[in-house]
Length: 149
Image (cartoon, rainbow, N blue to C red; front, side):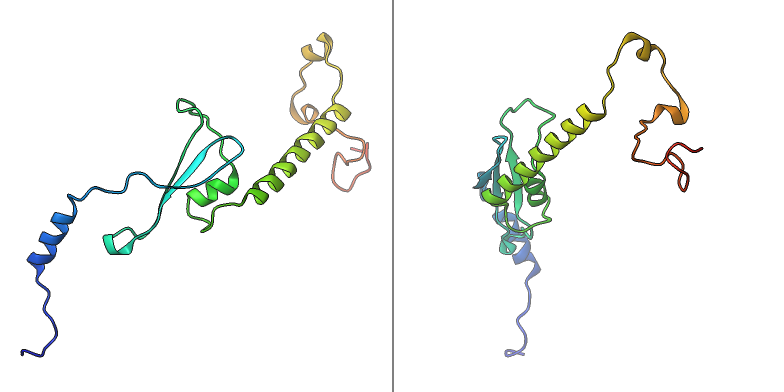
């Protein structure tokens, strides 16, 4: 039995793991990137040899006391592990430009379709189907004309 498979000494494994638990852990992660809000993102890579199968990822907000902190969708996907690589600067700038364009388009539509608000219209709050906005280019009831009911 001298040439048999090596035996596992359970007490030795427990003792080794116990002694390894006293080693200081890596607390400071590697800086990965920053978004246009000023948040900084960090990561401690995965190391299966010490039992860390997934990387640890977190961010430091610009204002530590802000509980309504905004982060971009690309960075949130990276934080949650839905993407492996952090977003690039070009990707962030492209998506920021798209977001600004959508905000401009929404403001233009709001100004185009908004009606002047005076005291009389504020007092007459409609309920039911009449409370929804009605536009000339859309049907009110499916299959009917624009103003047929």
